[in-house]
Image 1 (cartoon, rainbow, N blue to C red):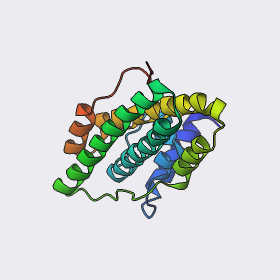
Image 2 (cartoon, rainbow, N blue to C red; image 1 turned 180 degrees about the vertical axis):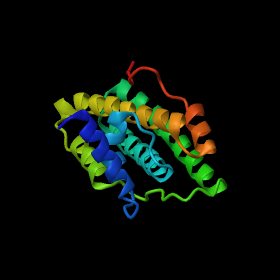
Image 3 (cartoon, rainbow, N blue to C red; image 1 turned 90 degrees about the vertical axis):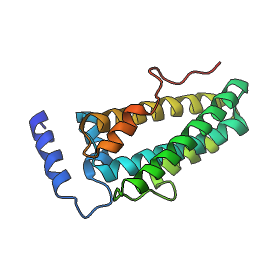
Image 4 (cartoon, rainbow, N blue to C red; image 1 turned 135 degrees about the horizontal axis):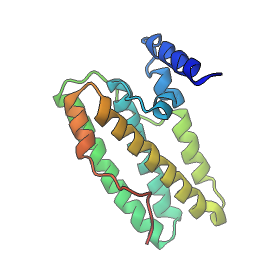
Length: 171
């Protein structure tokens, strides 16, 4: 399929999904691949899901990780709890119509389950890989919304939320 056909298909799908809780473009990763800003409701859902996933993974890191991973995990829990609370307060104060998920969706839960079930000798590698991947996804989400989102307060939140320039590292 030609690139232009993919772009047209992605655009058509995103316009035809108003009834869905999350746009197809964001759910499938098409928006990320094309650098398209998520819709406000998608941003709120994905940012909240990212925080919840990072917190759950970091709790496992505190239980099963080495000393450096435990220290890193404590910082991740602190940071993601803070951004989660800030996002919740912003959504409420700005009267943003978006649903903040109460639990992980099946995709994110399966990542946590895989990490939880990792063999002891594989845990560090799996944990590191998951952290790097989650970090890249979160940075992409925040940068795309900061550049092209439609809510100014959320765009400022994205610009003001600290993100490491490099992938997470331990020790």
